[in-house]
Length: 161
Image (cartoon, rainbow, N blue to C red; front, side, top):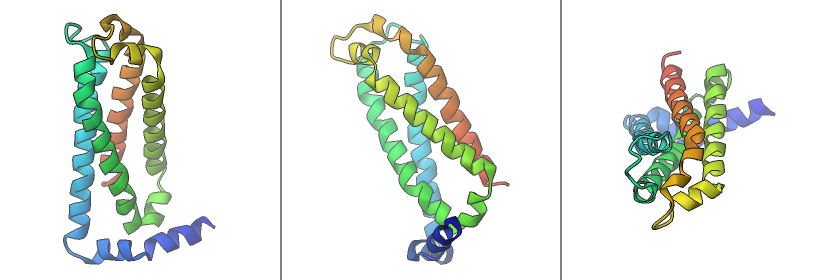
């Protein structure tokens, strides 16, 4: 069943175009890297703030700017990642590092959902919010920074293994 699915992905028109049109794969790869850069570039300062850096900066204005940027980056990475996978699905599906990367992305997504559903986040990210509400989120900030960094590391290593 998995083999049939991977064969269908590999023989799709999108995968064929990415393999044979000179600029398709490099452009999709560049879009994926841009998405990751937007995501990590926006999420890291927010995670560091949750860890206690820049305590004088209220979380609300920081989150108001950085969360949509991180979300846009995540969206771009999630759209382009499967396209990159489609070019050689058997290779990627057979790599433990690929599955580790997907697991880490899932862990990071669960962390985001937990943070955004927490009372501390809601208290700290409303206009005029309570800046003292953020410290309980420090662990989530540490997990986020570490896990997204590991996702990037796995992604880069995939290109070389």
